[in-house]
Image (cartoon, rainbow, N blue to C red; front, side):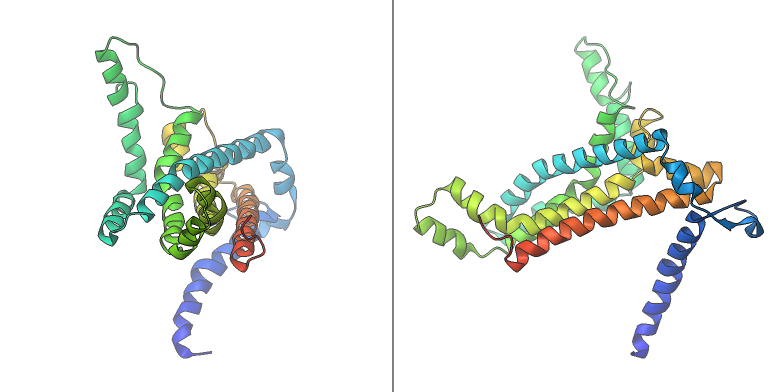
Length: 278
């Protein structure tokens, strides 16, 4: 082992392995979080999570995350496809920059901005009132949470799909055209299958932060849309039950790892030729 790698190993040990060990330790123990002498091994935290109220929260989190991921795919794929097909590299770079620039702004500020747009006295309702219509309840519901997820995580879908499409060998498309395939057939049989690794990566990159978010649901969902990330935050910050919060974190981590394993397997099969063109 080279000495140059020691700082990286130390960094991983302090900021990854030790915090992860503490989360696992708290998840499988019970007792007073402020008194380590009261800790004892127990699975009560995981049994507690199986109660209907927490299962409903987990189901809602998975559903909203899946919906936002699908919407990001529906919006992101055409955008990535259009940008990737621009002939000039400068034009492609400028268009991608438009997606990257908002990410330079603080995540919290970007989410706060939607309050001024969707609020009761926001831009949309002010415009409706100007036209003579009544104000609409655009905030504090599942729709506003999904909108916040799509807005914040759409670049995570566009960028990986774009990176695959822009590197695609154009000779494959030309060969399909020479064989008499029309545009729809070329897209269905050549372009889309070859872009699936980027789609799988985009699904992972969007679903992972969406299912664990709590800022978006706090600001745009209020108390009406509680996600699993909000419950975990409450256990650590307000309730002080680090054991139950850690157990929920472990469960959420396991779900995310399963999703990543499934998407990586799909992308790996396609890249390895086992999921090939159809």
